[in-house]
Length: 125
Image 1 (cartoon, rainbow, N blue to C red):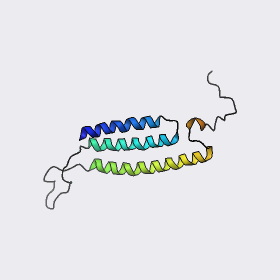
Image 2: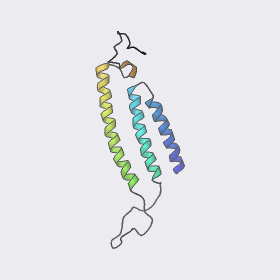
Image 3: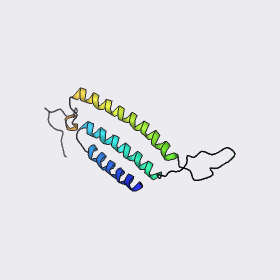
Image 4: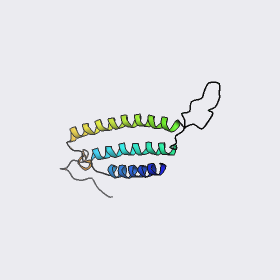
């Protein structure tokens, strides 16, 4: 099971990097979202995928009586999902406003500091 998840993580990382190298903002945003999912899946996989009992300590005992699952990776992933979703929503709104102002989602066309009709700045000394 862990080998399948490791291959899936590799595919997620490859797809996200490919999308983030694009010139279009929407593809870059999708790449960032997939990258976050790849990181979450990495944390989940390194936390070991086991079918153990929840870490609930019965009354009158100070430690769990048997082997229990580690809840820390799941708590980290849940927190990361909430943070990455809010970050993605913010970036999506920012990209939409940029598209409304500039009329393009191409990063080469977003050169407000270098308008099309003027000379390029000096490229050397």
